Length: 117
Length: 112
Image (cartoon, rainbow over all chains, first blue to last red; front, side):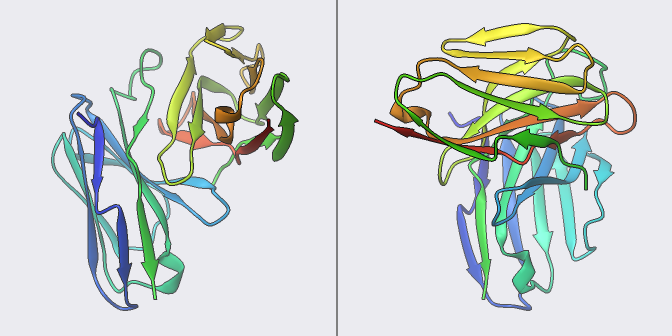
């Protein structure tokens, strides 16, 4: 069973469209993330949710709206897609990052390659 | 956004050689993670470090949490062709929001 799964794996769409990426984790973790990986392979955090509540929002345009219906799911909706949104988007999860120490390592999904044309 | 300085940026090595890469920052971290990413895949966790000075091994991989808590290194011994990929460090800050900041990556190519 896949621990963190994202759908779709590939997404090609036109500028101006609205699209969603779904993420589910079956690890029982209470924190989930969205990361963006650009063409240079830099990984940057976009959002973090803990127990369905937004705890990190890293200066992301408000065209990007995460939604967490429950602890196991964190979806990413993107409005009015732009060429610069083309990237690979990774979902990840970890167990309780609010602890100062402990087993809080993050596990990643396979990524969604978004191409805006 | 913040990024960790990771070096080297890329390296070509011969099969059987040992490899060393490191991450440095001006900030203090309480957790260091090392990941490997293969083409078309997500980062896969290799080693997690939680204490300053901690030295942890995972097969041919060894990683250390720097004493100053501002750096970490990863060693790969006796490299093999399947070690090829991008290696990332990730750190979690002590203060402020709890998030993982990633290094710029080390692209490793192993020549058989």
